[in-house]
Image (tube, rainbow, N blue to C red; front, side):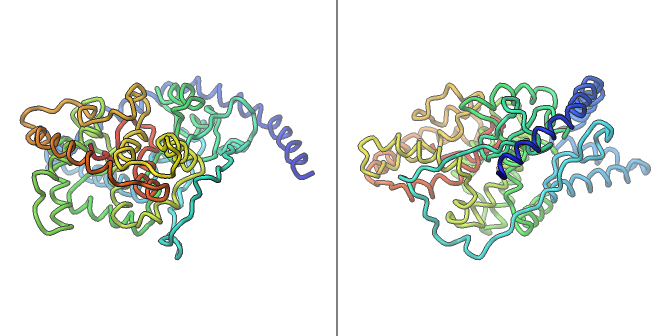
Length: 401
């Protein structure tokens, strides 16, 4: 009876908002200025080095200094609160106000072992109502590939989460195997608690990283050197610098020469989660859809059905989580350093390439001897599963070669 009443109320609600939906579309057609503002904003955002240089050049001009300070302050506030876009940037007559994100809190039992059965499959069901307007309109709802939420593309536009080409991306991928992550799941930074976020912000401040700017390879390596020295009180070694250079290349799949701020923030967020939380705590962050995909991956690798796979197969699965967008053609069992992109001869990542290949061959032979069961497979892959959530083609946590 409760379900029938809910359905009736839903139909009434559809009728009531039909005029509002029409208003959406009318409003959307009359918003050329939104794209112009986005393009103007894109031209204003440069690399970290450019931003610092511009700040130094404009420092003598007295009247411009307060404006720059307020802009920087707003960027830090957005970083702290996990907000991507300020409501003030939208025309309130034609926009919904984005929600205030509430950061998660750690529970007392978070670190205790978690039993996730391999045999007991989970029934994955999407919500019936749009997360934003709470209206059901069947086939026009777009599901998130991570959580159970569904959305109307018009509601996403009205929230400011779909702009320019992102609307095409949602409509083309949401109902495919690749899938689309909603604005909650796309932002790995929202997995951090307030305490963890404070720790990350302090690190960024100490390393003079300016929020919402792009980072070049030099910026990225300089930051990694400072973080490593703070944590271990010793300089970063050659092998670690090579690893950092490979991570930078993985975060820049289009070879633009810089890493976008959202990709850098997602990378640092997952790195911090790995550093501060045990694997049992990370396992609790997985959704039912992610657990089901992990089961499917393990069962496909366990060809003799004995409940064990080789360690090399486990590493191949770590690469497979990132098969999306421009990587859809890449075979999951054949991923190597070369897929990250070409490196120059002077790059720190290319200096020891032959040594790395020799080490990889030796490691592969040793890995085959260690069997990996289902619980170990989950623990060793959980960080990579979480890191694959964003829609970006960047690899936010580069698996070992």
